[in-house]
Image (tube, rainbow, N blue to C red; front, top):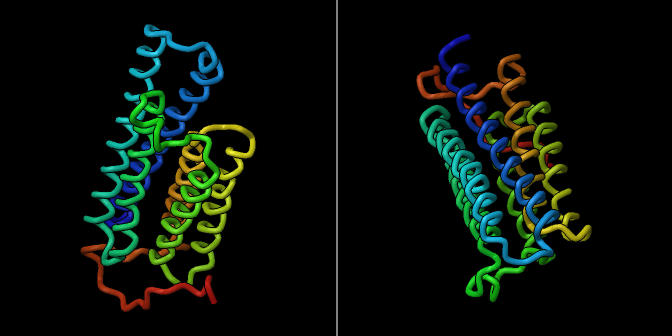
Length: 214
């Protein structure tokens, strides 16, 4: 495996591990709300769950931060993709903090974890972030298939509100979607079906657009 593929694999691996921790965070939320959400204040239980949840959340963001930094150091150009991915990580951080502090009065006044507009906006924003990854290797059908599958999973998150789940359901589907995307990108890159030009490689002249929208 050449140096560029090794660096790309590291990017993808960081992203996969980070989103696995986000999946763990969402499962913890689900377990907590299903088991204790209707009971009220349980200081010992609340503290225990928050410690575990925040640990999983922190680990997820650490690995996602590594993925973002490694992308910036490895992949040429793609400024929009890198910027949107950075904003996405920040958005997930804000949502997770609001979710675990939604019981506080100052948060409850403006944050509705069951709100349909929140679920729709979250899914649409994430889909837009996914579309920016088309710039990794324009005109490649395999990459376009990866993005279609990823966006389809993301959009499922909107139905969590209809089924009565909080925003953590959308966070969960996003994490599954990004795990899928990074895993498929790693596979196609190693198979050389998708070629991503990196710093240190011989420069290739590429028009950064995709036929997906044509």
